[in-house]
Image 1 (cartoon, rainbow, N blue to C red):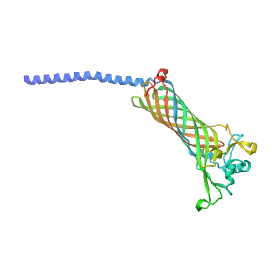
Image 2 (tube, rainbow, N blue to C red):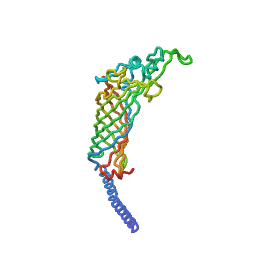
Image 3 (cartoon, rainbow, N blue to C red):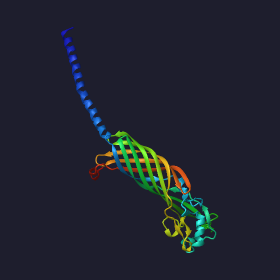
Image 4 (cartoon, helix red, strand yellow):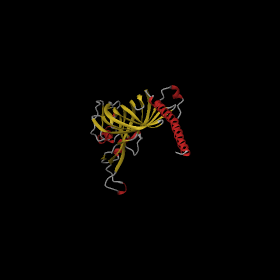
Length: 323
Protein backbone atom coordinates (compact mmCIF):
# COMPACT_ATOMS: atom_id res chain seq x y z
CA UNK A 1 0.00 0.00 0.00
CA UNK A 2 1.40 3.39 -1.00
CA UNK A 3 1.52 6.41 1.28
CA UNK A 4 -1.09 8.15 -0.87
CA UNK A 5 -3.48 5.19 -0.61
CA UNK A 6 -2.96 5.15 3.16
CA UNK A 7 -3.87 8.81 3.37
CA UNK A 8 -7.05 8.11 1.35
CA UNK A 9 -8.04 5.28 3.72
CA UNK A 10 -7.33 7.48 6.72
CA UNK A 11 -9.45 10.27 5.22
CA UNK A 12 -12.25 7.79 4.48
CA UNK A 13 -12.20 6.53 8.05
CA UNK A 14 -12.21 10.09 9.34
CA UNK A 15 -15.22 10.93 7.11
CA UNK A 16 -17.07 7.84 8.30
CA UNK A 17 -16.33 8.75 11.92
CA UNK A 18 -17.47 12.34 11.33
CA UNK A 19 -20.75 11.15 9.74
CA UNK A 20 -21.29 8.68 12.59
CA UNK A 21 -20.73 11.47 15.09
CA UNK A 22 -23.21 13.72 13.28
CA UNK A 23 -25.79 10.93 13.24
CA UNK A 24 -25.30 10.30 16.95
CA UNK A 25 -25.78 14.03 17.57
CA UNK A 26 -28.99 14.13 15.55
CA UNK A 27 -30.52 11.09 17.28
CA UNK A 28 -30.92 12.82 20.65
CA UNK A 29 -32.63 15.71 18.83
CA UNK A 30 -35.12 13.30 17.27
CA UNK A 31 -35.67 11.65 20.61
CA UNK A 32 -36.30 15.05 22.11
CA UNK A 33 -38.93 15.74 19.42
CA UNK A 34 -40.59 12.44 20.19
CA UNK A 35 -40.67 13.28 23.87
CA UNK A 36 -42.15 16.66 23.01
CA UNK A 37 -44.86 14.92 21.05
CA UNK A 38 -45.55 12.68 24.03
CA UNK A 39 -45.85 15.80 26.17
CA UNK A 40 -48.45 17.13 23.73
CA UNK A 41 -50.35 13.87 23.90
CA UNK A 42 -50.18 14.02 27.67
CA UNK A 43 -52.19 17.28 27.64
CA UNK A 44 -54.99 15.43 25.90
CA UNK A 45 -54.71 12.39 28.17
CA UNK A 46 -55.12 14.66 31.18
CA UNK A 47 -58.76 15.31 30.23
CA UNK A 48 -60.72 13.56 32.92
CA UNK A 49 -63.49 14.22 35.38
CA UNK A 50 -67.05 15.47 35.04
CA UNK A 51 -67.96 18.04 32.35
CA UNK A 52 -71.24 19.74 31.45
CA UNK A 53 -72.49 21.12 28.17
CA UNK A 54 -75.46 22.69 26.36
CA UNK A 55 -77.13 21.18 23.27
CA UNK A 56 -78.84 23.33 20.63
CA UNK A 57 -80.06 21.76 17.41
CA UNK A 58 -82.76 20.68 14.95
CA UNK A 59 -84.97 17.64 15.47
CA UNK A 60 -87.06 15.70 12.92
CA UNK A 61 -89.51 12.97 13.92
CA UNK A 62 -90.35 9.99 11.72
CA UNK A 63 -93.64 10.55 9.82
CA UNK A 64 -95.50 7.38 10.84
CA UNK A 65 -96.24 8.75 14.31
CA UNK A 66 -97.63 11.97 12.81
CA UNK A 67 -100.65 10.03 11.49
CA UNK A 68 -102.03 9.96 15.02
CA UNK A 69 -103.20 13.52 14.26
CA UNK A 70 -104.76 12.83 10.81
CA UNK A 71 -108.39 13.23 11.94
CA UNK A 72 -109.40 9.76 10.78
CA UNK A 73 -111.51 9.17 13.89
CA UNK A 74 -109.98 5.80 14.75
CA UNK A 75 -107.46 6.95 17.39
CA UNK A 76 -107.97 6.70 21.13
CA UNK A 77 -106.41 8.31 24.19
CA UNK A 78 -105.47 6.63 27.45
CA UNK A 79 -106.59 9.75 29.35
CA UNK A 80 -110.14 9.26 30.61
CA UNK A 81 -110.72 13.01 30.76
CA UNK A 82 -109.96 13.71 27.11
CA UNK A 83 -111.05 12.52 23.67
CA UNK A 84 -109.77 12.86 20.12
CA UNK A 85 -112.32 13.34 17.31
CA UNK A 86 -112.40 12.47 13.65
CA UNK A 87 -112.86 15.44 11.30
CA UNK A 88 -116.26 14.29 10.00
CA UNK A 89 -117.88 13.68 13.38
CA UNK A 90 -116.37 16.81 14.93
CA UNK A 91 -117.75 19.06 12.18
CA UNK A 92 -121.17 17.41 12.49
CA UNK A 93 -121.09 17.94 16.24
CA UNK A 94 -120.07 21.57 15.80
CA UNK A 95 -122.75 22.27 13.19
CA UNK A 96 -125.51 20.78 15.35
CA UNK A 97 -124.61 22.33 18.73
CA UNK A 98 -122.76 25.62 18.14
CA UNK A 99 -124.92 27.55 15.72
CA UNK A 100 -123.01 30.82 16.15
CA UNK A 101 -119.54 29.42 15.52
CA UNK A 102 -117.84 30.91 12.40
CA UNK A 103 -117.10 27.44 11.03
CA UNK A 104 -120.79 26.51 11.37
CA UNK A 105 -121.55 29.46 9.12
CA UNK A 106 -119.07 28.14 6.55
CA UNK A 107 -120.54 24.63 6.66
CA UNK A 108 -124.08 25.97 6.27
CA UNK A 109 -123.04 27.39 2.90
CA UNK A 110 -122.31 23.88 1.61
CA UNK A 111 -125.50 21.94 0.74
CA UNK A 112 -124.04 18.42 1.04
CA UNK A 113 -120.51 18.57 2.42
CA UNK A 114 -118.43 15.46 3.08
CA UNK A 115 -114.79 14.54 3.73
CA UNK A 116 -113.11 14.09 0.34
CA UNK A 117 -109.69 12.88 1.53
CA UNK A 118 -107.65 12.58 4.71
CA UNK A 119 -104.18 14.12 4.94
CA UNK A 120 -100.67 12.85 4.37
CA UNK A 121 -98.97 13.77 7.65
CA UNK A 122 -95.37 14.61 8.50
CA UNK A 123 -93.41 16.31 11.27
CA UNK A 124 -91.83 19.67 10.63
CA UNK A 125 -88.18 20.14 11.64
CA UNK A 126 -88.14 21.78 15.06
CA UNK A 127 -85.60 23.37 17.37
CA UNK A 128 -84.61 21.50 20.47
CA UNK A 129 -82.49 22.28 23.50
CA UNK A 130 -80.83 20.19 26.15
CA UNK A 131 -78.10 19.57 28.68
CA UNK A 132 -75.21 17.15 28.49
CA UNK A 133 -73.07 15.64 31.22
CA UNK A 134 -69.95 13.59 30.50
CA UNK A 135 -67.68 11.65 32.81
CA UNK A 136 -64.24 11.44 31.12
CA UNK A 137 -61.57 8.94 32.06
CA UNK A 138 -59.41 10.08 29.10
CA UNK A 139 -60.13 11.72 25.73
CA UNK A 140 -61.10 8.38 24.19
CA UNK A 141 -63.42 7.13 26.95
CA UNK A 142 -66.43 8.81 28.52
CA UNK A 143 -69.88 8.04 29.85
CA UNK A 144 -72.39 10.62 28.58
CA UNK A 145 -75.93 11.62 29.50
CA UNK A 146 -78.24 13.87 27.45
CA UNK A 147 -81.50 15.51 28.56
CA UNK A 148 -83.25 17.19 25.60
CA UNK A 149 -86.68 18.79 25.05
CA UNK A 150 -88.48 19.77 21.84
CA UNK A 151 -91.92 20.93 20.76
CA UNK A 152 -92.80 18.88 17.69
CA UNK A 153 -95.46 19.85 15.13
CA UNK A 154 -97.21 17.48 12.73
CA UNK A 155 -98.89 18.99 9.66
CA UNK A 156 -101.00 17.85 6.74
CA UNK A 157 -103.80 18.99 4.42
CA UNK A 158 -107.26 17.39 4.23
CA UNK A 159 -109.95 17.95 1.60
CA UNK A 160 -113.65 18.68 1.90
CA UNK A 161 -116.20 18.22 -0.87
CA UNK A 162 -118.75 21.05 -0.61
CA UNK A 163 -121.52 19.60 -2.75
CA UNK A 164 -121.40 22.72 -4.93
CA UNK A 165 -120.54 22.86 -8.59
CA UNK A 166 -116.86 23.51 -9.22
CA UNK A 167 -115.69 26.96 -10.29
CA UNK A 168 -115.71 27.53 -14.05
CA UNK A 169 -117.04 24.03 -14.68
CA UNK A 170 -113.76 22.21 -13.95
CA UNK A 171 -114.34 18.64 -12.68
CA UNK A 172 -117.42 17.06 -11.18
CA UNK A 173 -117.36 18.48 -7.65
CA UNK A 174 -116.06 21.44 -5.69
CA UNK A 175 -113.23 20.37 -3.34
CA UNK A 176 -111.62 22.65 -0.74
CA UNK A 177 -108.29 21.90 1.01
CA UNK A 178 -107.61 22.89 4.62
CA UNK A 179 -104.72 22.45 7.11
CA UNK A 180 -104.62 20.06 10.05
CA UNK A 181 -102.10 20.43 12.88
CA UNK A 182 -100.93 18.29 15.80
CA UNK A 183 -98.53 19.45 18.50
CA UNK A 184 -96.68 17.54 21.19
CA UNK A 185 -93.90 18.01 23.71
CA UNK A 186 -91.06 15.50 23.66
CA UNK A 187 -88.44 14.86 26.31
CA UNK A 188 -85.49 12.59 25.62
CA UNK A 189 -83.12 11.07 28.16
CA UNK A 190 -80.09 9.28 26.67
CA UNK A 191 -77.26 7.40 28.37
CA UNK A 192 -74.34 6.19 26.27
CA UNK A 193 -70.66 5.52 25.72
CA UNK A 194 -68.43 8.03 23.93
CA UNK A 195 -65.14 7.42 22.20
CA UNK A 196 -63.00 9.60 19.93
CA UNK A 197 -60.40 9.33 17.18
CA UNK A 198 -57.61 11.91 17.03
CA UNK A 199 -57.50 13.97 13.78
CA UNK A 200 -55.11 16.82 14.51
CA UNK A 201 -54.14 19.04 17.40
CA UNK A 202 -57.35 20.27 19.00
CA UNK A 203 -59.67 18.19 16.80
CA UNK A 204 -61.03 14.65 16.86
CA UNK A 205 -63.88 12.50 15.61
CA UNK A 206 -66.45 11.72 18.31
CA UNK A 207 -68.63 8.60 18.29
CA UNK A 208 -71.48 7.75 20.68
CA UNK A 209 -73.95 4.94 21.10
CA UNK A 210 -76.33 3.91 23.85
CA UNK A 211 -79.93 3.67 25.01
CA UNK A 212 -82.60 6.29 25.55
CA UNK A 213 -86.09 6.93 26.86
CA UNK A 214 -88.61 9.40 25.48
CA UNK A 215 -91.66 11.01 27.04
CA UNK A 216 -94.41 12.38 24.78
CA UNK A 217 -97.19 14.71 25.90
CA UNK A 218 -99.95 15.57 23.39
CA UNK A 219 -100.71 19.30 23.35
CA UNK A 220 -103.06 20.11 20.46
CA UNK A 221 -104.83 18.66 17.45
CA UNK A 222 -107.00 20.94 15.34
CA UNK A 223 -108.16 21.76 11.83
CA UNK A 224 -108.39 25.24 10.30
CA UNK A 225 -111.35 26.00 8.01
CA UNK A 226 -109.35 28.63 6.14
CA UNK A 227 -106.48 28.29 3.63
CA UNK A 228 -103.72 29.15 6.14
CA UNK A 229 -102.78 28.22 9.69
CA UNK A 230 -103.03 31.03 12.23
CA UNK A 231 -106.66 32.15 11.87
CA UNK A 232 -107.92 31.22 15.34
CA UNK A 233 -111.55 32.11 14.53
CA UNK A 234 -111.71 29.20 12.11
CA UNK A 235 -109.87 26.63 14.25
CA UNK A 236 -111.76 23.53 15.34
CA UNK A 237 -110.21 21.44 18.12
CA UNK A 238 -110.17 17.69 17.62
CA UNK A 239 -108.54 17.14 21.02
CA UNK A 240 -111.13 18.09 23.62
CA UNK A 241 -112.26 17.36 27.14
CA UNK A 242 -115.06 14.84 27.61
CA UNK A 243 -118.51 16.44 27.82
CA UNK A 244 -119.81 19.76 26.51
CA UNK A 245 -120.24 23.04 28.29
CA UNK A 246 -122.75 25.85 27.85
CA UNK A 247 -124.16 26.08 24.33
CA UNK A 248 -122.72 22.71 23.38
CA UNK A 249 -119.16 24.07 23.36
CA UNK A 250 -116.25 21.66 23.83
CA UNK A 251 -113.25 22.65 25.92
CA UNK A 252 -109.78 21.99 24.47
CA UNK A 253 -108.10 19.18 26.40
CA UNK A 254 -105.18 19.97 28.65
CA UNK A 255 -102.66 17.86 30.59
CA UNK A 256 -103.08 14.82 28.36
CA UNK A 257 -101.20 11.92 29.92
CA UNK A 258 -97.49 11.71 29.20
CA UNK A 259 -96.36 8.32 27.93
CA UNK A 260 -92.89 6.80 27.90
CA UNK A 261 -91.07 4.81 25.24
CA UNK A 262 -87.56 3.42 24.85
CA UNK A 263 -84.98 3.07 22.09
CA UNK A 264 -81.35 3.10 21.07
CA UNK A 265 -79.22 5.77 19.43
CA UNK A 266 -75.95 6.37 17.65
CA UNK A 267 -74.21 9.68 17.02
CA UNK A 268 -71.14 10.90 15.17
CA UNK A 269 -69.46 14.28 14.97
CA UNK A 270 -66.37 16.46 15.28
CA UNK A 271 -65.04 17.76 18.60
CA UNK A 272 -62.93 20.94 18.59
CA UNK A 273 -60.89 22.15 21.55
CA UNK A 274 -60.27 25.83 22.38
CA UNK A 275 -57.68 27.16 24.78
CA UNK A 276 -60.12 29.23 26.84
CA UNK A 277 -63.57 28.21 25.66
CA UNK A 278 -63.86 24.54 26.46
CA UNK A 279 -64.93 22.24 23.63
CA UNK A 280 -67.38 22.58 20.73
CA UNK A 281 -68.95 19.42 19.29
CA UNK A 282 -70.84 19.20 15.98
CA UNK A 283 -73.03 16.08 16.00
CA UNK A 284 -75.56 14.14 13.96
CA UNK A 285 -77.71 11.60 15.83
CA UNK A 286 -80.10 8.88 14.71
CA UNK A 287 -82.32 7.13 17.25
CA UNK A 288 -84.58 4.13 16.84
CA UNK A 289 -87.47 5.03 19.13
CA UNK A 290 -90.71 3.57 20.36
CA UNK A 291 -93.18 6.49 20.50
CA UNK A 292 -96.44 5.94 22.37
CA UNK A 293 -99.41 8.18 21.54
CA UNK A 294 -102.73 7.29 23.12
CA UNK A 295 -103.32 3.57 22.80
CA UNK A 296 -101.01 3.28 19.80
CA UNK A 297 -97.31 2.53 19.49
CA UNK A 298 -95.02 3.63 16.65
CA UNK A 299 -91.46 2.58 15.87
CA UNK A 300 -89.08 4.52 13.62
CA UNK A 301 -85.91 6.55 13.23
CA UNK A 302 -85.77 10.10 14.58
CA UNK A 303 -82.97 12.38 13.37
CA UNK A 304 -81.21 15.30 15.03
CA UNK A 305 -78.34 17.63 14.15
CA UNK A 306 -76.98 19.75 16.99
CA UNK A 307 -74.05 21.67 18.39
CA UNK A 308 -72.79 21.11 21.94
CA UNK A 309 -70.71 23.55 23.93
CA UNK A 310 -68.85 21.80 26.73
CA UNK A 311 -68.51 24.52 29.36
CA UNK A 312 -64.98 25.12 30.71
CA UNK A 313 -64.42 23.74 34.17
CA UNK A 314 -62.84 26.99 35.44
CA UNK A 315 -65.20 29.94 35.88
CA UNK A 316 -62.40 32.28 34.82
CA UNK A 317 -62.07 30.43 31.53
CA UNK A 318 -65.83 30.68 31.13
CA UNK A 319 -65.75 34.46 31.45
CA UNK A 320 -62.74 34.83 29.15
CA UNK A 321 -64.01 32.32 26.57
CA UNK A 322 -62.84 33.38 23.12
CA UNK A 323 -63.07 31.59 19.83
